Length: 273
Image 1: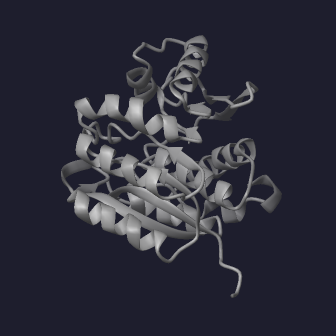
Image 2: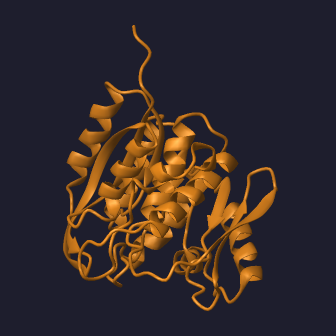
């Protein structure tokens, strides 16, 4: 049998506006030269101005999507995004335990860029206690990290504490994204690896509202790199560079929080992305 092309999986919600969610995952994974597959968990009605509504899918069809992929494809890494509520989180956890889809990146999506909730409050504990212990990498932003670790983040020292708390929960590698510190001219993320090593990744801020889908894009890029066999550190560093390029070389779409430019990396030297 011919060697299979590298495959990765996005487990997430759909963004009708095309900027975030599963659409951002698909664009990113394929831009990283990995074949993207999907398990759809919810459908949103949204655009760059915000989320108007969403519907979570029946657990039965979620189960069937997982089974269909496992019966045919050779998925080497997967990621989660929007999971909606307790029922869907538990459904996804059950399937991740049943099927081996390689390293798992958890993007604990809770709130849309425009402020709409994408995860019910009672589901946060399920993500913390049941999903995070399965994660190879978790990539929470500051508000998400605060909820998951049950503490307030005031500064970079707190980011380090949160990362350690999440690792105690069971996450092997943690990337706490510092983009919400708006007073800083740098966007700095703290990374704590499974072996205890840690480092900061920083990039100068870009004055733009076109940042819709940054978390999805970052986690999808990490997932694609892990599928290719890259180390966690290398995957995270590539993810940071990839997202930075998508923001810096922006495109104008919509009238609100616009999407990223997912093909921007093509203008950057290969050895830099």
